[in-house]
Image (cartoon, one colour):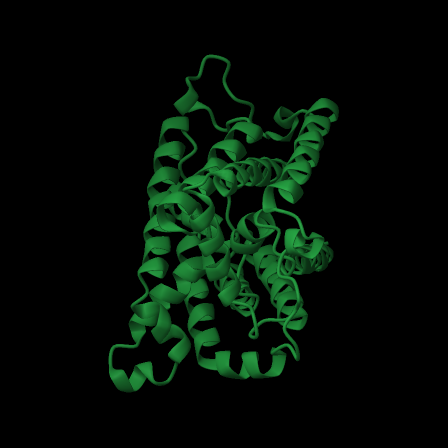
Length: 325
């Protein structure tokens, strides 16, 4: 089992390498058009549809759900592969949350639709600079934070079960977070160049939930879910996320950690999963879509979602801890 600080360490490294990778893509003659197209596609989910209210409220609800089920939309797939108890119930809850949001989406959009379109979508647009001019200094600051964390509190101190000194790379229970984060973050640039997209995970639940709409009459009940049912990009995300189930299984099998991580109760797993994905869909993104990709492209609303997400998680964790004595 790994302390939560390890995850935040990894996230910082992911954001750092993602920003560097996307900065390189944005400077390449053949990469800049794909980078610009990716950002336009990203913005379409929000412009005129999501404002500060939806972003903040959705992020808060998302954080509450994560604290209850001890997972997030992306990590849940890995938990399924590693045999975490009740992860299947969290998946059922997540699909229920996506389905519920699909039914009430018109009402949510109507109540939270922004009154005016923001003049700038990203930090670099606000500053009037190219993306890489704004992103690279932030990436350097993140790298400095990672260095400081490692200097004053080495990542190994977060491991409740230390790595074996004689284990091979595949047999290690945990890789250094800066290595894991940088490897995962490097995928961002590749995805932009090949698919014109970035890493995300909560959309995959909407795509899978859309399969319950088996007739045209049922599809008319939720145009929102219907839009994902035949979306190649949404199903590409499903494939990407489901592949992490296999990755989690192989990693846990090689390291002897398969089925050794404790889970939450069945009720907490299902309820938390439903709340988590409902919040993510309200905010149009989760810890991956906003926390990694949105912040990586310097999307301003992502910087609203992130603190709201952490606030919801921290407050819920405090309440649960107090309730358990």
